[in-house]
Length: 353
Ligand code: PHE
Image (cartoon, rainbow, N blue to C red; front, top):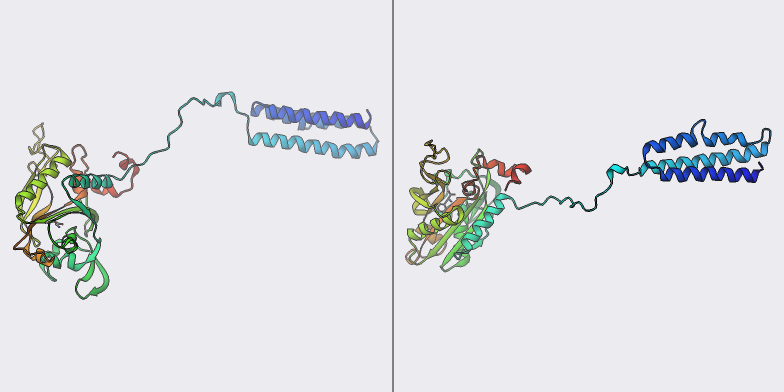
């Protein structure tokens, strides 16, 4: 064979190898082709036998050409291995429904806040927003709890290191949403006032039914001739709307510095429907004899009205405040034993809501 014929033969050999590699249908076939072309006794090495013995110039020329051919075949093998042949088993069924991206939802506490807001908006309340780090004055003094008053001890307060304001005093993390009461009176000026204040509150406490950060919602109504009946009616309305029509509120005498008279508020237990025992005759462990305590309430104290610039001889009002997590926990069917779970960021838990 002359050089021209040899060159053609080598080119054909190379092209044939690359074509077969590109067409290969499995990894096993690729491996077989590697041995056939690049193996020690493969076709490219055997090609050397075509070179005339003793022809130095032919040897030099084809030495380089053979090397180029090997590299080309090697590269074809590598690129095919990076994009391996689709085996007949993993064909794509384009008619299958696509995987849906996971959909999130609002946090259960946010859902509860939305629901509470809508319930009160339906009877004319407007949601207010007041600071969650507030002056001692609005959290305590204006609520008839002057400095050093022992009633302050009930609110396990986080104090902020800050310079004291000459009139309003130091700063605290709000221990209740009642800090909105006098702020709302100052903002509105002349009654009627119908406030819904929902905010974060903070207390030094942490157990299965308390977290150091939690939420409260607070209702404040001030107008002429407001009585306890309005308070009771509003609480019953909320109980019906939030829990169901057979649930109502109960007022128990209590003491707060900023209301007179004051009450603790209970709702019918949603687990035993107020019976205090289960159908099996067992005592209901969720409540105290059919009622669950959810918050505090009362008729706004005259001293608080005065602090807000409202004449207690002309106007009266009621207020109540409740924990959002606490109220939410009592929803029928929820049985949320440990409210700390709400803030655990545990998706398996949160996805249930
Ligand atoms: N602020 C009280 C608490 O946190 C609840 C309350 C609100 C009581 C309004 C009376 C009136 O316990």
